Image 1 (cartoon, rainbow, N blue to C red):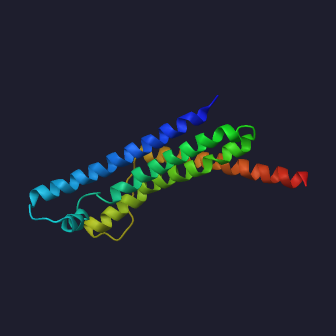
Image 2: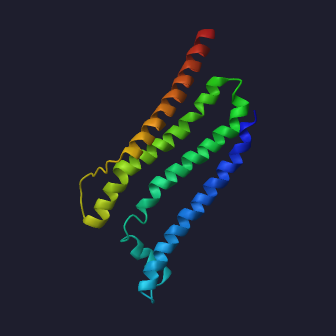
Image 3: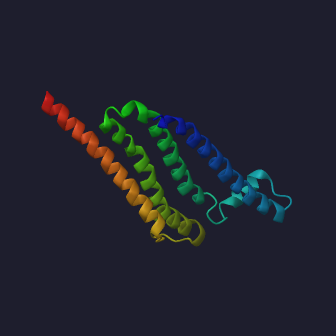
Amino acid sequence: MKIARYAPLLKALVVLFTINLISDHIVQLSQVNAVVDSLSLSDALGMSRHLPRFWTGLLVPLCYLAALWATSNWLKNLDHTLPNLSDAFKGLVPIGNYLVYAAIAALFLVPTLESWINLGGRGFKLEWAIEPVVIGLIGSVLKLVGKNCAALDEGLAAKSD
């Protein structure tokens, strides 16, 4: 079973999603430019920090895209690591890391930064939603599986010496 053939497809999807994300942000800037005709690009970028979630809205999708890219790398290497199953499981750690980063960004980082930028708040803010919690827990499980396989390999290597 050649599962590695799906890796380029995932990377192509990451590129397409990134282009879509960038074009969505360009559309937001063009709407600001349509309101004020004499706005230069640097002025539009300066105004962009006042648009809701213009920059902070990139954090979570970029973490998801990084997780998808790491998944593509894992699939590409899976055919080579399958004979040693623990190596295959160790490749899950970066995927789990990016999913946890996305969850943290969605729950804490983005709401806190938005509060600081737009409302002048100084405390930490939590925006509770079930989706980032579930994604973060799945990422944590992937990390635990990968790290436990790495620890198991180290323990077996130490016993064999």
